[in-house]
Amino acid sequence: MVCALSALLTFAAYLALATARNGGAFEYALDDVYIHLAMAEQLFQGGYGVNADEYASASSSPFYSFLLPTWAGLEVQRWLPLFWNVIALMLAGWLIGRALLRAGLGRWALIIAAAAPIALAMHVTAFTGMENMAHGAASLAIVLGLWRFAETRQLGIMLLLGVLLAPALRLEGLALALAAAGVVFLLGHTRAGLGLAVLAIVPVALFVGMLSMLGLDPLPNSVNAKLPDTGTGDGGILGNFRDNIALDGGRYVFALTLAAAFVAFFTLSRGQISKGVAALAVVAASLGHLAFASIGWMDRYENYLVVSLFALLALMLAEFGETPKALVLGVALVGGLLTYGPRFDNYISNPRAIALQQGQMARFAKDHVAAPVAVNDLGYVAWDNPSHVLDLWGLASSEALALRLSGAPKGWADALADDKGVRVAMIYPQHLPRALGPDWVLLGGLFLEDHGEPFLGGDGVLFYARNQAEARALQADLKDWAAALPEGARFDFAADGSTS
Image 1: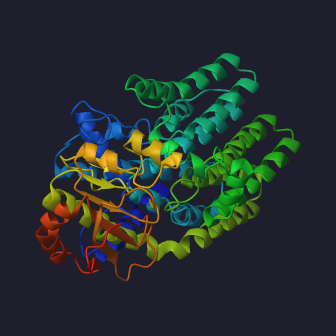
Image 2: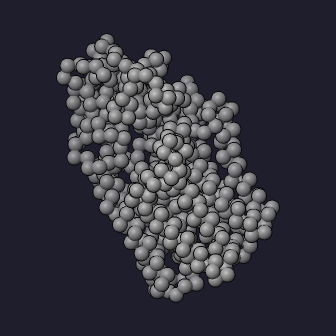
Image 3: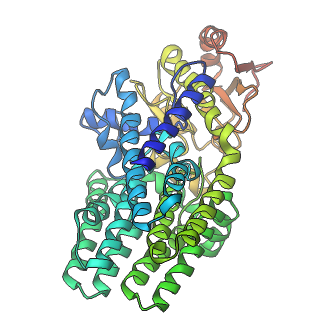
């Protein structure tokens, strides 16, 4: 329980520091959690997406949004992601603790167990409010359950739950789940291996089937929007791998993967075939992520690999001497501290940055515009907003996604905006340089002051009115809204009503 308690206390300290940095107001570290909350609102009303008048696959998690419809439409709903992440964090800490307990670290056990959640940045992943911490817990269940199978040839409830839930929470979980199924199959338990594979595929198949029944692409928009930037896009698999390991988090995952592979081959050389094969399956899943998926965005994408590889190292080192295995695990934790420690100030500052940027955009959209708006960073603006939110990046709009990725001519967003009755667009101009046509009127820009290096889509968000008439009609509301901006945010009005 030491590891679970350390995870909880670290999280509480992080929460306190981040809340204090935000003037005493609670806020999540990422705006993305509000996509899930907005989708949960529509699920509560019988829809699927972020707008009542259209279906959309804005979330890449098959299951997570289904955990959040309770109290939809009420402020208390905002706390549900925090609740589920605390549960997931405690469970993940407990599972890592079990791996360390089996490692038999002796006098080093308490130190490593207490340090692991901090060094592995588990508290940060949990505070994003996203599904990533739960995915990490499910992945740990696979690793520990698979190791138990390698030792005893028995399928346990831990392995079954991990194989089912990891793909249900994140599509990346399918790789580790199928790798585990493959190990069981290769070690002679053919039916059990096939059964595990079916168990892993079922939640993904149901998700894909649901999207297809709704007339949506089988892959969610949130995945399709990222494909050009990953191994399935123009960069190629090797390019994506290179880009991932160029990042601090990617290098750390790669180092853990290499360490796990080395120990796995050593394990095989000692004749422990079952354990060696199980370990190499986890290594293969990690390499697959580096080749095909993403690293970063507040370091949450790779955290399931970080905790899984660390637990795997602990399990593989159990038969080593006390000092060598403590040294290897200690070096792994130092690597985590060196990777994520320098980001500490950015981590605790990001909730404030979200409140100052996304929170203020949402206040303008809901309290002042009170009509359809367009954005390219979906989240806070869509949650608890009865008006349509046109997502120009395309997570919540298949039409916008198709136009953006097709290289449509300048002004491609105009017809979409007119169809939805959009009055205002709030965008990062560097991400959508060709979306808006010449009729849009620049109102000004929302900027953060003394913001450091937050995890945001951009430092400034430009506000555009759909035309001159809307610009004139919005002036009074815009001034009232700008006058109430909190310290740390400012709105620079366009000097001459220039257009885009």
